[in-house]
Length: 452
Image 1 (cartoon, one colour):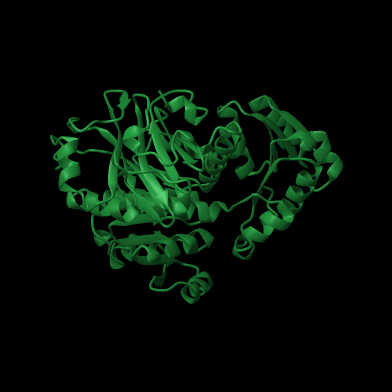
Image 2 (image 1 turned 45 degrees about the vertical axis):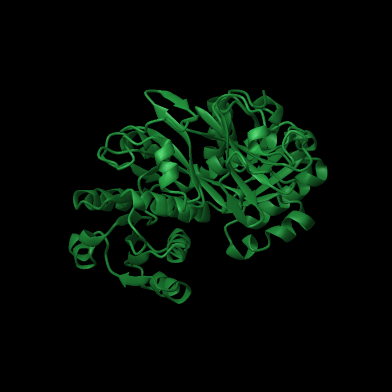
């Protein structure tokens, strides 16, 4: 599948790097000849110097036979127009970068009438990712399925964890009130689907599947997560701040934003709910002390200046804040970040690149396979597949105990309407169900590949 990227700014370059790492067939299109030449030389892709809103340039880039067009120029309107033209020429899927929240609310109209299959917003995507991280501060990864109805949380069992030394069957029998399931365990470089007699050990990396609040309650019951009411200090006032604070408010966090920009503070004050706004210089340690950095459960530096974010994050780390998130936008600092003691470094452009890469993987699954989407988990040692049962004779109307699955395959969750069911052997699948299946099998391209 050929993918055309229109726009080689920071977002476009990150998407290009991510897709070429997966050996995708990519063509780039930009009005800046130097950017096109650099991309072609660095990533060995096809490049066209042209305008994504001009049909002839899109034709030259191969839009007529393209599997996907990804328009990520700085202009929302140009991105939507580019997608419309490319779809009219024959491109199968279209993704547009759209930052204006007003446009984001019209995704159904854009999909049905304008041909834009997916909208991406780096600031909103970043906020959602940080929100997931802060809901589960100890998590290495948080994967979302079924439009947020289910999540898989990946985390390492720390020393002294109450889960260590317990058989999985003991955990399940004790915690029936939580609709969760431990889908995979990674130990000593090996990832496997655990059984009832599997004993959990210190430093095991586990993937827990369920609704986010069930996972939260489960982890809290074992002392691995604090209850809601955590205090999060955010530095900076911008779109990223707004989206993040909005996310955290919805999840019951106590939020305080500090920024020296009075005008932006007033704007946020008028749009947010319970968040506290403080207009002050966040580079001043005395300000951070006064505003309670010592009591913060989490700290997120999301200002528009990487240097400020890094320095204040290092200070927060020195004060013992349990979870520190540092937002950066300059790829040139990546080598430096490897040398400093900050783990929670995140870029909105990397987040969007990963989001688009996941979308590409989901639609690259062969037609007729029955698979709706596919995600790599457990450091790429396992996969999580979403599929709709429909009238598949191997699954529809059958109890799980009667479905002959290969070793290393587990049905981790069933999404039934608005409800999530953590299944057992007696669970009967319905044609309307959406199923999340986890497997350590390689090269799964259809549901037949997981059956004996």
